[in-house]
Image (tube, rainbow, N blue to C red):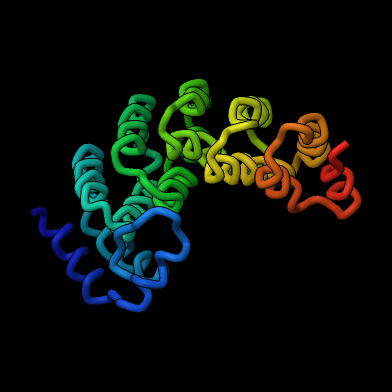
Amino acid sequence: MNATIKNIRTDLSNSADETARVNSQRFFKEEVLCYGVKGAVVRSIARKYYKEVAALDKGEIFALCEELFRSDLCEEAFVVGEWLPRIADRFEPGDLAIFEGWIERYINNWAKCDSFCNHTVGDFAQMYPECLPRIIQWTGSGNRWMRRAAAVSLIIPARRGKFLPEILEMADRLLTDSDDMVRKGYGWMLKEASRLHQQEVFAYVVKHRKVMPRTALRYAIELMPKDLKAEAMKKG
């Protein structure tokens, strides 16, 4: 085992709280593996050991990230989510295939999905918008987390007012998805897009409100004024 990984695991184990570990399960419908370490502590540990890995080449850092992912422990996946945005300036278009493989193999709950995709894949998308069609294709996956990943990878760009056509295309593809986690994911994406494109998102919701799942609709309009919310919620 790599010494850095060993030390990270020792620190996480020493910071674990059994009550927190048990209580964390209530946030998930599926069984999750975790130490029971608070997010702020995980971030501190990630920053501490990033100093050791920063000088490594990208391939070596990716290998460490995969080793962390393989454990299936949430906090180790969160370390990956802290590290990779720090080396975003080293990303290359071909890295998307690696990220896609990690999502397919290792992402198995919403927390891992969002931790990895919001910033790592989101940063990648902003650097290489020509790769957006491939991310959009994830919406057709049979893997629920890959479909959620497609949407939540555009959360940060959406918040910045970017990629509205791609966001609406993503929503079209996920519109009637049967999975609640996917519905929440694309609803969240639309909510963030509404910060700078309120009228466009409102028009989209009104157009599709007859078939749009209420979970997704409520997320999408969360930031809108009361009158727009009331109009969007009409069933007629």
